[in-house]
Length: 90
Image 1 (cartoon, one colour):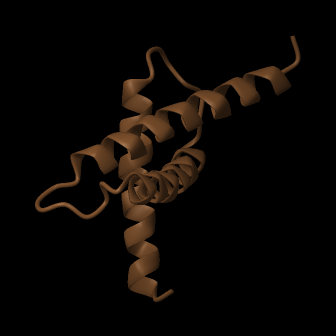
Image 2: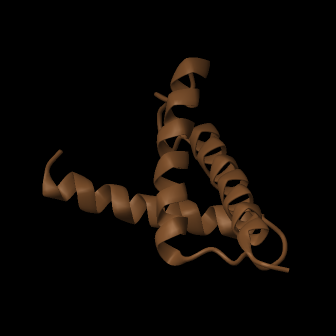
C-alpha cells in the first residue's frame, strides 16, 4: 500500500466512522482513533458485503454500499462504546 492509499483509508475511515456515530442515538464515549479504526473496518466489510451482494459496481454513487458501510460503522461504534462501558469500575 502506498502512502496516498494510507491517507485515503484514514480519511475515508474517519468519514464513515463519523457517519456511523451520527446514526447511533445518544452520546458515545469513543475516542477519535477508535472511531477511525471502526470506520476503516466498517468500510472494508461494507465493500466486501456489497461485492457479495453484487451491488458494488454501479454507475454513479454506490448508495447501497455506502449504507452498508455506515450501518456497520454504527454497529461497530455501539459495540465499542458498550465494551468500554463494561470495563469501567462501578
